[in-house]
Amino acid sequence: MKKILSVVLAASMLCGLCSCGKKQTTAVDVESEFDKKLTFSITSIVAEDQFGPEVDYIKKKFNIDFDIYNITEADWGEKVRIWMATGNMPDIMQASINNKNFAEYMQWAQQGLLREIPDLSNYPKLQALVDGHDCDDYFMVDGKRYAWVSPNNYYDLKGELPQTGGYSFIYRRDWAKKVGLYKEGDVYTWKEFEEMARAFKEQNPSGNSAGTIPLLGDIFPHFAGIMQYSPYWEQYKKIDGEYVWCMDLPETTEALKWANNMYKEGILWQDQNVAKSKDATNKFVSGEAGILFTLVADYNIDSIFKNMKSILTDINIGEDVAEMYVTAPDGKMWGQFSINYLYATMFSPKMTEEKMERILSIFEWYLSDEGIEMAKYGMKDYNYTVDEAGNKTIIKDSLRGCPFVTKAMVSGVKKEDNKSEQIYSKETLDLCDRFEEKMLTSDTSSFRKYDYELYFFTGEKYMQYGSYYYDGCETIKRLITAPGDPTAEWEAWKNSVRPKINEVLAELNN
Image (cartoon, rainbow, N blue to C red):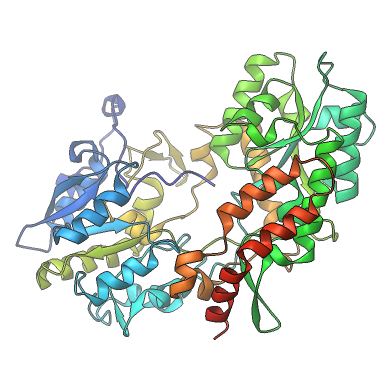
């Protein structure tokens, strides 16, 4: 999935495009129905003068302007907390409200630090959106709405689509052919996956003097059988009406034993436990490794492909590297459903009714045909051209739309293919498209799903102890590389934290 850029979507600078010789749509071309100009204070990572012509258009259309509260990706969360603690939040503030800080949001609302969003009956598109959006319900406090919850995908309000920009395996298809184990369609059972990794070790198709690294990945230990054997391994899951701690499930122990055996055989990269960010990817890119677990997102795959072609000059990227669809040990396709929200947009309790109504008018417009069109493509002749047949051609990639609005309303709207083709290689798009198609057409009955009741649970013990994810993760990573049978030490660690886990389970199952 693409990295979330910021709380504000600002337009890229459009240098050089104004000389194309065509009449361009500008803010001058729109008349506002609002007589009084209003200025909003908002959070932004990019300075206002970089917002671009799309924002100028919306400023003119709604007779608005902005005062900027500057933030960075690094200090965003910290500044939000400072503003809330000092009562100095901007009129419009977005924050990443998730299962780690949801209790804070609840406290802000209960303490009167946020403005209630009024009745939406005068805004039918907004009302329809919240009626269909599952996650919105969890942000209600005492029956009142204090946050506008950004849909992850306007067309998937219930999170019923599998994650199509997620982690998976890619592999050297040409090496699979060398060792005689290639399968048409690139779909392999868990046993075939293991057999291929073993063949890469034994037959050394890379030709490297140090041998071929069979299997490695960007996120460890997750990819090393853990998430395939036990999809919910690091959290709680309701089974037969009761929550259980999934680190305690027998399949989690089986996953640990499998990974430990792969490490002992030299199939799992021996430096995996001490590897730093991108170390695994770099080994694959340089032609030393055969199977990589990585993010199947266009920007990431494109980077991998470009770097591979610069190092391995004789490689045929489109044929020699491919996605590897590996079924779980139980024979089912594995994957995950997308979470169906991104951000929460909140409003200052000091903000006037007039300002609130103006914001909701902008939100409502952004769900109109014109608003959605601008969110998807930007402005005609700046971001795209239209030929006589009505076909659009993207002429500049930019982040478009009014601050706080694009993320708040139409996050995840799918872009047209011809936009991406201007940025990423055909090989990149082909691989990502195949992965997306596979995810959307697979049997998703075994895919991991978000339990929103658990995700937004704010019980005291749960908030204090969680599921011991970090400690459990570090323990598993260490035991994968341990000599001997790792199960005894794994059981000992679980027993050491079990009293606190039982307190959480009692709270969850109350």
